Image (cartoon, rainbow, N blue to C red; front, top):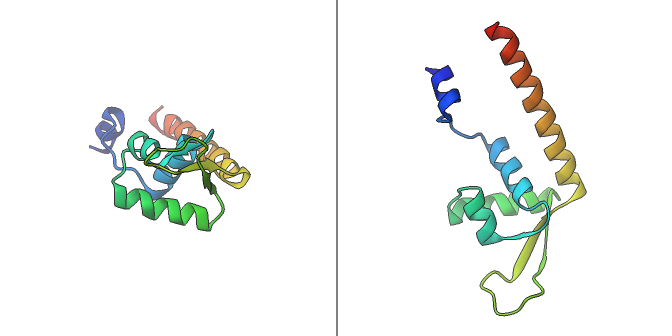
Length: 104
């Protein structure tokens, strides 16, 4: 059943996966709404994760230059956040390689 879920993409995301998605979405700067839709999060979840990531300095927030928008702030992944994302991708690669070895 687990293999079927993985192949079809039905497995649930972990918190680490969600954090990586947010950091990826905000890599070149993004507003809350963009991050929320790209990462498929509720408004409440988004606020919890943004606060968590800002507190740990993985994400930074600054006023948006264009006025009149509902999202007055832009979020951007910090260097520390980019290092986290690189490590996350390396771990995923290692896990998928070991998964291939066990299937053979």
